[in-house]
Image (tube, one colour):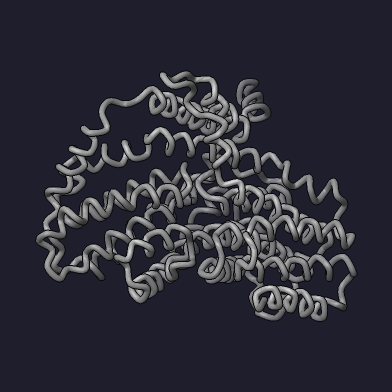
Length: 475
């Protein structure tokens, strides 16, 4: 009951603080405050909070039913569905596990403690670029535990195991390099397109986000080796375990081959419009056609639907029963976030609050606002999911930028990337919770190491955006 009371209290306080604004703005802000508290406290499932907030927008006259509920039919929602179906097929077919063992079987990847630690992070990161980081961590945890059981026989009092476990969650969490890799990316891209008219393409996102991804993966590895690498055990037996596990899996199954084919089809279609424009020019007929017809949503849905047609010995590569188990809660959360964000902008609340925040903080430069948004998103991601954090902070970032009359793209991107950088608490992200549940990572160690990486993440994101966005014409 205390959680519900806190949410209602937030609604009441916001109503009082915003009473000087227009009625629709005050109500939109009050609903927003209610949703944020419910997301943080998880008094009800986060998807339910999204639905409730959308219903309140309609009931209180902030948005029409068509506008509010239309957010759940946004093309980006269907992009999520397609991506989740591809990820589900990778998980159901065992392709993700096979790819992990395939890399770890090589001695160069596991010959030393340093290499093993980096290899685990790299595998988790690469898979998480296209598969849910929660699913990747859940899949990688037993692999990491198995490897640890082999090498820990001669580990003595080494704390290397803590580093291995944290590398699994950190490796998956820093995977922000592609636009479909994590919900905050799509949230920012959607809001930027709505508010500025600029659509960030698949390749364009990689040009600034992949460097953030790479630097953060390297930083995570360095931090963990410095903190937990002393006295690390020998790891040369890890490749043998991975090889034996791969042999036990047998040859690649038809479902795995079909999933691989569908995945590469999606990847090719995601890259094709940009690469065609790069070589033929954006005005070429083929480039124009691909840009208009082969959107990321079309690519994801075409490839994922193919999974229901491709045959296996037991039926089809993906069944509808399996498909129904994708993370529909995140999809609903995203739809509710779009509805809330649209209400904040259409009522003028976001820009109004942005102007007031800019005035109160005395920060009115582009890169000062970007730094503030990165910090806010990173802090909130310690208490709420990265999707909820981005849903909350990205509209505020854009409003803050518009209020200060600066380009809203860098602050929005900073907020999205910052929302994925919550490393400190077991509740910060599902991957953190999964690793913590293993009993191999004390909470104080996760907090201590996570705080270091939080600070590094804020600095890395700001520097990469500061250096790369002006070059790309996004700042």
